Amino acid sequence: MSLLLTSAIENGVQVVTLNSPETKNALGLEMRQAISEYFLEATLNDDIRCVVLSGGEHYFSAGADVKSVVEYGPTEMAEAQFEQYWQAVKHFPKPLIAAVNGYAIGGGCELAMHADIIIAGESAKFAQPEVAVGIIPGSGATQRLPRAVGKYRAMRVLLTGQPFSAQEALDMGLVSDIVADAEVRAEAITMATLIAGYSRSAVRRLKEVVLAGADLSLESGLLLERQALHLLFDTPGQKEGMRALLERRKPDFSGS
Image 1 (cartoon, helix red, strand yellow):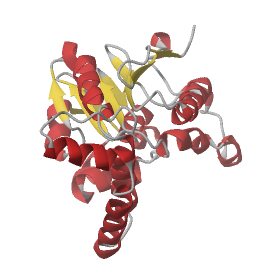
Image 2: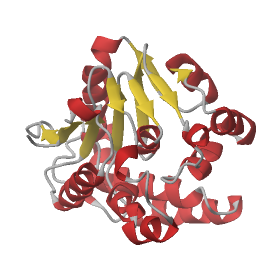
Image 3: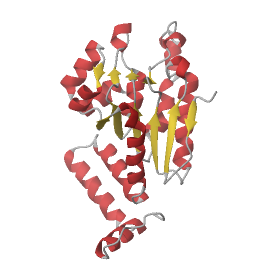
Image 4: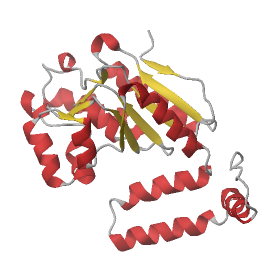
């Protein structure tokens, strides 16, 4: 059985689904490898302009495969280099939307935080429970969560290890939208299709500037923004978009 299911590419959008129901989509070594390989391939596939990442009806992902690492020591953990499998997701240059139904726990929540947009079902649950088993998160939660929701809300999540609802996630700024559980995938695809219809150059540059700017001073970030804007004036997408506006027609970004 394939650990990842991929849809046909439609309107520049591909849906990739975690597919290990017997493990609740746990992020064991094989699953991590499959995710990494998919995003490396999707980066090089020009037909893919936006990706939707989803899980199961009841579990987006239950997080790390604890059974496989319970007897590890520090050396084994270091040599496993689990972080390498997230690099392809972290550096994925195209928009990524996480469609979260059910539980996104530990590494599953961290995987969702790699996305640019998170759409959650109304009954979705999130948690970073690592402290309850004697460790801390290892796939970015200690860094991404405070940047997303602020120190004090992040510390409550990380130090208590308690699950929180989709509504709480929305209120703290962790998710972008909440929809009915049955509509999560469709809503994510609708949003992805809208994004995929824009200029490829503009969308990629936008993501690049936002992510890079998060680690810069305000002035450095503004400079990066201006430079990116100027460079876009040498792209087919800019010419088509502005001409279409002036001519009062819908732009055709298919070639850009």
